[in-house]
Length: 465
Image 1 (cartoon, rainbow, N blue to C red):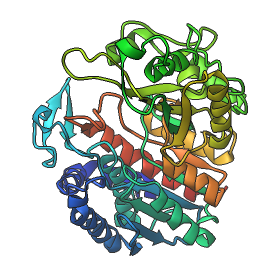
Image 2: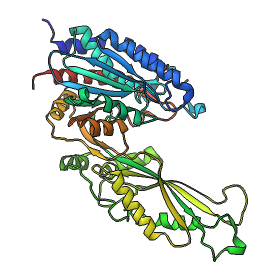
Image 3: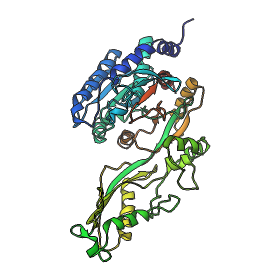
């Protein structure tokens, strides 16, 4: 009895895992570190490698130079089904500290780790391994059926870890085609756990500042002037200490305005088994801190934060130096909840700091990054249920709808520039994959199931609605 196209495709994936892993090893071997200028040619090589993978499958592939690293656009037109855009990135983080790696970071070693087989290497999980799950699913479908079940545009960039402006410029240029997509698929997030897939439905935004307090024209002798000239470093500490109450609630008026999280997502977050003990074990922290009226999941995903990332000022060398420093500064970032906008948060922070800064010091607040708003995905879009069912078929577990406390700049760019109503962040990383850290790795069974998952999703998106 002839198997249907999906079953033939899944069987092909099962029987060709060795070859798929070998291709992933080849990509990991290219040290495409986007933040280091000496790896520009490696980023170019990674783009060319991907082009050579996609063209034989029937994709029309073009490489688009940017002011930084190239973006690959690969189009496949099918006769039926939806039109979807898939996003991934081929660039990776630097490998420092190299001394902590157990294997060379660009060799893609297969090893046993905590009872499971993994592939090691920088980018194994973020995002080369995840990106290749989608490409391998496309490869299997085309090999077995001669075509994809739906039309696909792959956008694979080389600046996710480096410069968010490159993808924004690209999307504005190609908006007439891409804005017609029925769905955006992004594979750069996590599973809920080893046995349960996840769809990430919310992201927090980001603003970053440098707060500077200037006092006397130069450092002063504390014996000669202490007590009559204000110390900018002490004033800075007082200002920063006035931001939170003892439970972590931010006291800046308006800081919690404009939060928009669908009740469906709030209810899902409350029901997820988020273990405080696991969080403490993962972080090495001594206690959970935060607002008492919200669960850990709600706090991590749906509330804004005000974080002091570093303080600079005065004497920090060995020994004693009795001075009143002339200047003190702090590095600050704020995670924005879904619905919040960078400009509004900046206004609230500036007003609060100026109101509470005493006379005798001059305050400046300088933005140090292009702010990103928070974002919540529509959980009731019809394709959400289609994709949930496809994932459930593969994992035999309903996917968790989760949030992500960080930011994914490309997602914000796609949402704001293309206004695609259906954005699906479906990733297969695990929390212990050591992303951005030494000994990054990706589970081989997860790589396999991720590929099968995309095959099921592509098939579902190709069926008549």
